[in-house]
Amino acid sequence: MPELRQNPMTKDWVIIAPERNKRPDQFVRHKAQEKIRKQEREETAACPFCPGKEDICGEAVLTYYQQDSPGQGAKSTWSLRVVRNKFPALVEGEEKARITEGSGNFFIKMSGMGFHEVVIEHPGHFQTIATMPLEAVEGVISSYIERYRALIRRPNIELITIFRNNGPRAGTSIRHPHSQIIASPIVPIHIRHVVEEAVRYYDTMGTCIYCNMMDQEKVSGKRVISESEHFLVIAPFFSRSPFETWILPKKHRASFAKISTLEKRDLAGVLINILSRLYHGLDDPDYNYMIHSAPYQEDPADYYHWHVQILPKLYEVAGFELGSGIYLNSTCPEENAQYLKEIRADVSG
Ligand SMILES: [Zn+2]
Ligand SMILES: [Zn+2]
Image (cartoon, rainbow, N blue to C red; front, side, top):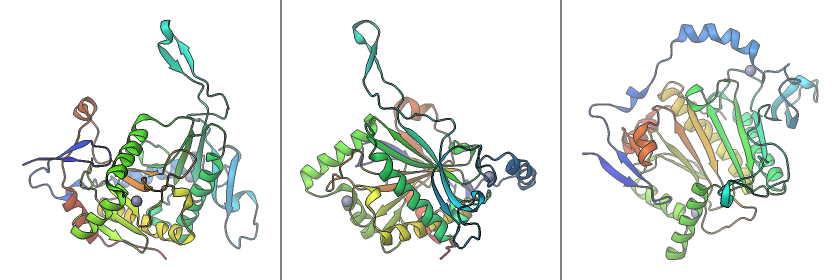
């Protein structure tokens, strides 16, 4: 019998309708290895993010260098670079006045101001977070924090979105490990809605809804995939799609940019751990991850709780989802959590 489940943070509903006799490992999509190897040779030559292409991939706004590298500071001895996107969604500017169009000022628009940056996470073209050493992933998180802090101070910036598209089904054609950061002058309605629901819950209960959800999950344990000193990794009760995974910090904090050095190091290990469970358990699936941090420049400490959402791309959003706004998940979050829990993750460091 399918079940309708509600997300208490958004009040959205999802349908959990596990396909009969379909086990989690049947979602593994084995890639045609021969075809991939042939493409790989052509791929590195054309990659704009590989070392040696520094001049063509855009101006660096942040560079980390390889430790003890003899040519420290030289062009190709970097370990991570953050560059401006060559084809940005938003461009630097200060004008955020609304402009109207049509009779009665019916349509509203504004100039596309903001920032769009690419974090080139590693010099190695075939690396991915799941296979990188701990120090490299810690560097990726440090770069997110540095750029977040720099961009949120820019005039008229309201929201910083940090995300990673991994693989063509997740929206990227470039395999070279990279994430993106977009700073925008607006807070869209669905983000505002999540914040408003969190405020409403806090008004009634006097506690953070995310902290309370973690308490619930720890007691039941059936959707917990892993736990570290500072983080809890779960398959949410209301998972929209197969193997949706959330990383929740145990310490209540609204803004990701304010995490401690210890949490940063722990998060790097947790990210490697969960992404390598997905990598080994589902044969390197395409996925998106997004860091959800409180919008607005202040830190509204009590009601909002930053976290990471990982959405493997194992199915396509189709007519029903687009038409109704209700997600149809053909797997069971509890079974998926159990499956990922049992995968031996190759944890570095
Ligand atoms: Zn490359
Ligand atoms: Zn909280």
